[in-house]
Image: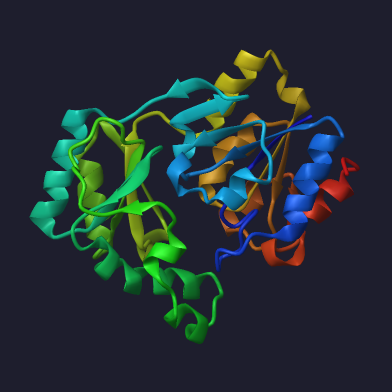
Length: 277
């Protein structure tokens, strides 16, 4: 089988702690002859070494803009320099802070680290972290790979995440950048905390289909596991879909099977349930 796994909320809990039982499960899966690919909104630069040390057969990053298998780059779609420049200027005109997600670093706007902290505290509390624990977060610790003071007009950007001052910012981005794909994360509906913008037509499911064609593998040999709305296209492209018990309602409803919560060994339990470990 080929296993496609989300990262945040699936391998990591919402306090950014890596599940040791999930790591054990992935290693057992690979030892048993299965292939495991991470499929994530993250770009390569956002992964700490502890993620790479788990062991994967490849990566789908940027919610599908980047596909790598056994060290070979299968697909890499980025925003054009013109699109990046236009969006950076749009953010600056509205005093919106952002970070550009590339495989070589997460390049931040001038005041992102200072202004993102309150939003990230709200994100963590919304995912169940206590007020006391959330109050002590450090932005650079929570988001790995942040780079300050570099050129922000770039041609290597997979996508850009930006702080929403209000839901209207998201609606305006959708209207002003119809040539790009605009989404949100960190909350539901009008409670979304961040917007993100990237290449139009990109999603996790389409990237999986491209990878399967490259590998010559049938959909019947695939399993997807995740926790969020962005994982639903991945669920639809795989034979079996698993949602974490702590996942969002839309993802739970779209999945074939619901396992336990991310912080209750849900990943390990799911693959033990299906007899793969």
